Length: 218
Image 1 (cartoon, rainbow, N blue to C red):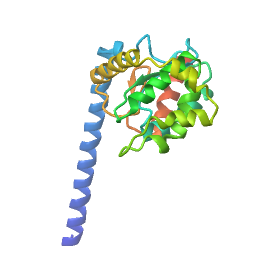
Image 2 (image 1 turned 135 degrees about the vertical axis):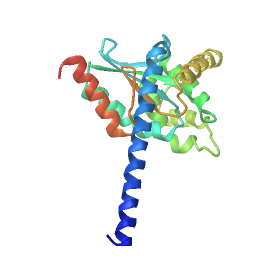
Image 3 (image 1 turned 90 degrees about the horizontal axis):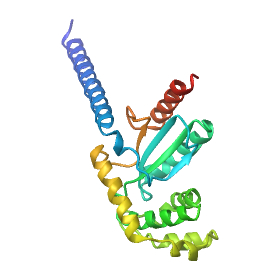
Image 4 (image 1 turned 90 degrees about the vertical axis):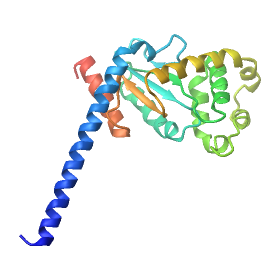
């Protein structure tokens, strides 16, 4: 065996060892995260949390989200499609984790919209116009009002239903639960209490599909 072959073989072995170690580390992280959630299952949902889908569904997706989060916006369509695909079998519980500057103002509007039965519609608008109001360098959540007016939402009614103090209390509870569950980025998903094995569309779809199959025998 010549020197070049030895070097290539050694490099390949090192890559395999590194990959195996990384896989084991990641697997252990998932196990530890699952244990953490099991111990602190009460932190997944709160009575005040917005819910979409069938309340009696056997599969619950909990999403810690931020209206100004680009990744949350990117996942939004997939989450909505998942509720349609498994109509009646899956429900979504939304938790607020407004880590970005100005996101708390967006949550205030979402909570006002919820009182008027317009939560989903206003959330769609916020994600759809996110590029205009949620710049991380210069967030301008007040522009949401202009977008709402443009799309003919009842801005006056929404403003009458703003409750800054109540929303601040909800956010504080959600952030405390996020801290308990070691949620430090958005979106973070749990499906029937299980964290995603890794972040990604396919991982989300597979975990939901697996839980639906387990719950409904499909």
